[in-house]
Length: 536
Image (cartoon, rainbow, N blue to C red; front, side, top):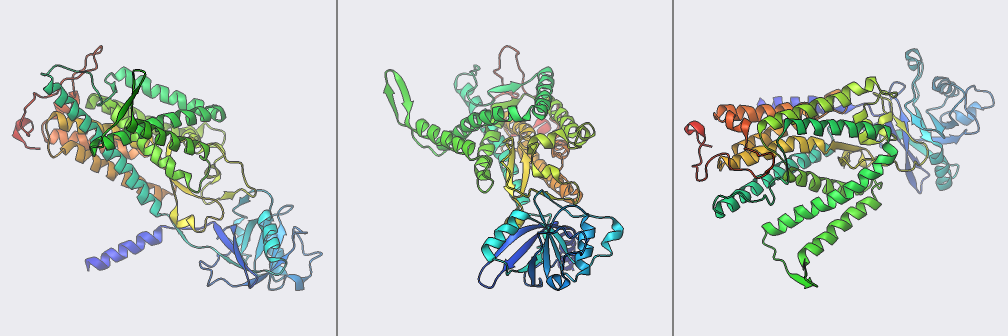
């Protein structure tokens, strides 16, 4: 019985995850060769077969010399039982398809020199049409003529697409792994710092690794968020200029971050270093090799950043290193600062995603337009409407501030352009700073089970799961912080309350404004138990 219920639930999920595909495939065959091209259609007219095997083959007839707004000049024998290709323009889609239908055509293809949009009409027109209608690129038709000549047999089909794409699982794995590794790294650096202090007789020493920059003042947090808001607005209005500045900064910062990550890994596995001196300057062979590798990767990304087919791998690699290094370098001094920062960034995220569309000219949120770029094709999609460029477009520069993973389910049929699932770096870094604080707090209380770190990681995973679930159900992108911030903050707070450590968790470490060195929250040598005798 439980297995049957599980199968039913899974079937319902998969059924409800099916989406009305607006992109189809034109399969052309002349008996010796075959090729496929992109089509854009609407199921509001007549649906297409979902598989090539079930699609009916029809002869293709070239009528691109006409727009087929009326039957004059077209012989019925030339169209009867065939699929005519006509040019777009001068009359509505409904008028063209009704004329073709009256002449006995089996389907109608409209060649376009402009962008391909989902063909639509008045609701009353759809019921009159019983043959498929689709748009194709005119350059694709010319290419087909060169390859196949005038004798072509075509099949139209639309493979089903699901909202639940494997890329979501990959994105979830990237995000949770980065947050967990970043938090663990921050805690390990804090443990090493405290060990160095203990070995030095308890005297504070400059921090080597754990938090090169600390946020301990609410005013600094407010200023930091205000600067982020200002930068986002500037990017919206001066995108074409500032995008190159951000790309250059990203290349430098990501190369440095990748060096830091790889250097830490080599230290962990005990890889030795050899050094040599030139004129009283000492150089590490390992550091030089690592620097060359990291700079090369960043330069390759910078040169080929618009190659959608494979460059996403390097961008994600550099992005993971950037997020890890940021979480290790920036530290929040206490839970109060965590609450202030994450709450302000939650408001920032929601405002720029949900509120700003009411003020922008095109009705697109500032956050989404800056993340995808003003020329991104994804911005031209409204509801079930799809728009595909008819001609090759010059690559538009995009900010390297997102993880990108291709939609694998659509990869094999991506004739209309590659589709990506994206996740902003902020959706990793912002909750990651709280996870890193929880990891350091575990060190301060000598928790061998890392209760705060583990619970915050689980909360982040659940928050990401809810984010993706809402995205799939609503069919639109979501500000992930809307779900991640409450999940992580509330979970961490509840753990602290349950263990009776909320005061210590809220206060964190003691900071001197002029001295960034911190003392352990609890005395050295404390047993592995919490306040009140509860064990970790």
